[in-house]
Image 1 (cartoon, chains in turn orange, brown):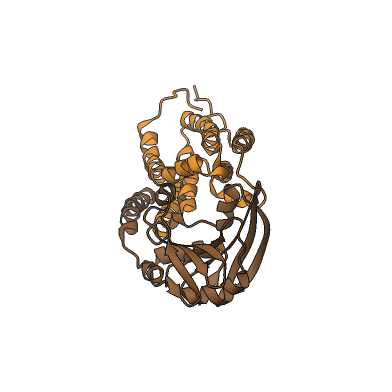
Image 2 (cartoon, one colour; image 1 turned 90 degrees about the vertical axis):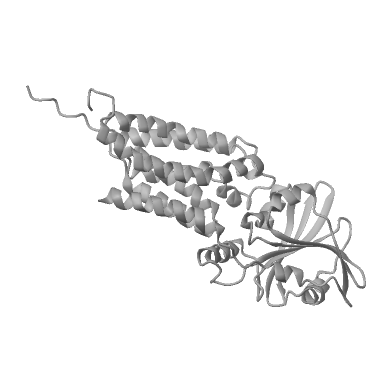
Length: 173
Length: 194
């Protein structure tokens, strides 16, 4: 790990593209998400679950920035594809999944992105449709945040076990 | 090189996501307008939508009638065409469940050229019955996934994959009974769902 925590100019430029993809995905996904979290009884607690989902991503981003990890273009490409197909087919779920996929692009994680994207189940309104087959009357509001906390803990544990960057070699005298 | 391609894809996606939804699609408004309001078998009176319903449905085309069947039985008919607001059309089971209705029974029934779902609902001391299906102009089906696939393909192909399916719901008035066999065999064909 470098001793200088500031980002070098090339690394900052490297984040510009995934950040732009994230901004586009958020632009298209957030209106439908906010609408569902406010009005859908099966999405109660979704906003809190989303914020809990973001917390470990912030932690991972901080670690990535300090270790000058490269952004993951594969995840940004997936997010772009989902965003475009979602807009063309008018399917909210694709645009929301695009947002979930755009975040690992910024974080610079590869396989861990599968876990961060899967953890989006905690706040995706579509999971409410599946739940409605077993549970009548909507959610109480604690279920999604509780699930999100569980997934956040799992995510951080996985990150610390698998993805911690190895220390940089000591400079030769 | 990868970055250049991805920047190009980002610009292209931004353009597509902006322009694509602006391209108009042929709606099912004609099919809604063709629903008869009177026949030897029934009489239909238009109903006003509530402010909340109008707000929720947005630009969707809606036909909303109180149907009085000859020989007894009254129903509320709602037909929603989501061409201009696909999100106005939901899985009816999801809406019933979200509104606190307990589904006491759910039966797949045959209608003229397809399938429908008949549900018996209860909430506190209220009871009601409803028959619903999606109709694409040539057949009736009940799978919300099939509806999403059809409507999404239609938008992806700018209408080339077929006509827009509409959601048809017939609900009995609270405390009144309806002969659903007569509805399936007589009323639905008379309304044009055949």
